Amino acid sequence: MRYLVLNRTPLTTGLRFPDWIGTEDEAVLLTDTAAVSTDPRERTAQLAGYVHVEFIDDFHFNPLVESLALAMHRRSAFDRVLALSEFDILRAARLRELFGAPGQDVACATAFRDKLEMKRILSGAGVPLARYAPVSNLADLVGFVESNGYPIVVKPRRGGGSMDVHVLRGEQDIDPLLASHRDLGTDDGAQLIAEQYIEHELLHVDGIVLGGEIRLLWASTQGDSTCLDIKEGHALHSCLMDPEDELLAPAQELTRRALAALPTPDTSIFHAEIFLTGDGRMVFNEVASRMGGGMIEDVLKLGFGVFLPEVMVRFLSGHQPLDVPAAPLRIAGLSLFPPRPGTLVEIPEECPIPGITQYRRYAEPGTELALAKLSVEKIGAVLATGDSRKEVEAALLDAQAWFERSTVIRPTGEPDLAP
Image (cartoon, rainbow, N blue to C red; front, side, top):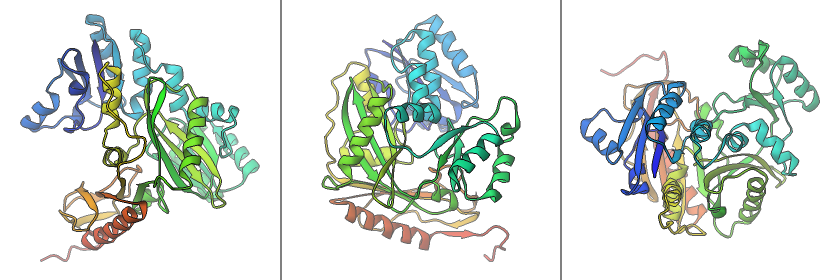
């Protein structure tokens, strides 16, 4: 078997497609140039095991990714296409159809990638949703506001990471949206969706389907933090639910209903989001056929002892599937510490807080910072484990307080008083 791997994220030591596929098959890598280290030793380790590697600059917008993949396929056919990123789901599906390869096709990928198509399917199946409508122009936007009132959320139909998400709380918020989306004034129109804004606690449900069977399905909560808060400079938390949590089973069941309504691939990782309202209702938001971002993969690995991309690729390549526990072996959680505008003066190197399994920093002193544009942007992050959600969340809050005490950001425009 010959596998094409599409990659845009840093090829860390844990992302080892050749090892998962096995030496009896071939792995070809088509990667963003920026995803590979410039250090010769690290670069050699990252690329080891691939029979061929091609590098592409400007990977996200470059149509040469598909052109080069097709040229390679014509020389030596690919049997499967592997892609883990949200932004490569449709690209990989198009290539599978060109190659005649099995796996998620374009119709299936569109149902997961296009929020409007997804919500139409889910609505038809009776899955509870916030009110929504497509927005191509100003008239669409005004009509939705007149029908539903403020506040509303407007976002790209095929976005990700809370990128370009706007919360409109009144007419004063319309002009900034129009300024950032000039396509709202074109004949072709914008590819946006408007939704009723719901005050909520965000739950996310992560798991994997292998051979048509859901093998892992578990919910986490972000508590009082949201993906939009991080774009305002506030920390984001997430923690696996305890097995006895009364919200766990309803969240799992709602996710099952959504996956059953959608054309879910026989083998796929998924990441779903659910709004828990103040009166205890669960409203389904969306689901993606990929791993959750923002270190959710690390939390699942700590909690369940398996790395879901490895589980999926080993299964697809015909190896004995890794054992996936039905419930977490331990409770795990994360906190992401986002940037704030200014110059980073000090940032700690190590975290002394009990219960913190790992601390990572993503910026160095002297870096000029701005507010995050994505819900996964961070200058620091921690992972925690414990026997219960209460224990883990306490460690995460202690770590946040420690990080805020230990990190110094000089606001933009403030003079440097260092000698």
